[in-house]
Every structure is written in C-alpha cells, then in structure tokens.
Length: 126
Image 1 (cartoon, helix red, strand yellow):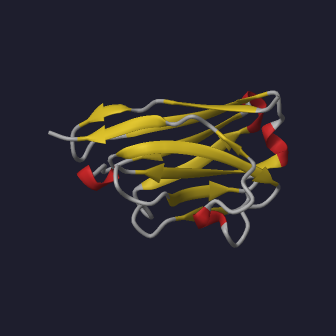
Image 2 (cartoon, rainbow, N blue to C red; image 1 turned 90 degrees about the vertical axis):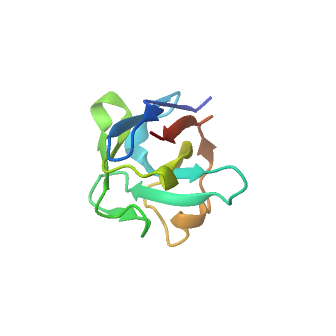
C-alpha cells in the first residue's frame, strides 16, 4: 500500500524559511511526479509546485514562484519543498500527492493524482 508522509511544517515568522519533506513508502517515487498542494481554512485547495519523476520538469504556482523551490532525491524516496520569504498568506496545511511520470496539464488542480499524504501544518505569524 502506497503511503506519502509529509513533515517539516511548523510555526515561522514572516520572512523565514521552512523545508517540507514528502517521504514515500510502499511505492518507488522515481516512477511518479510529485505535487505539493495547500489548503487554508475557508479556501479552496491550490497547487503550489510539481516536479516530474526524473526531476527534469518543475512547475510553480504564481503566488510562490521565486520563493519556493521543489527538488527530489529518488535514492531517498523523498521530495522536498524549500520555502523562503514566507508570508502570512502561506499559512495552510500542505499536502504532497503522486501521479505517474509527469505533472500533467491539470497539476494545479490535482487532477489524476492518486496518492495523497495527510498534510503538515505551516503557520507564518509574528
């Protein structure tokens, strides 16, 4: 049974940084594109970033481009999301999800992402 587990969330001040990890078990992540998503209270889920199975292609949501960086270490079966210059608007539960091979044109909406983690809370506040 495939399982994705997010970690690395927490409380950080505006302007600070966090690195989230998405670790897989029961599945080899090198076969999957991984997307990061977030959902704040009362708001719809939104795509944050996505990386293809080989790492050759990445995508970012407009609100995080230039501040967040997605990467992967297939040897460790883990995908990372480095988040810099965090803003209060980044406060949300962050999820990772897996889809075969490529991010897909619908990555932002999480289309055809079959495996989802339980999420990790990120709170940006002074």
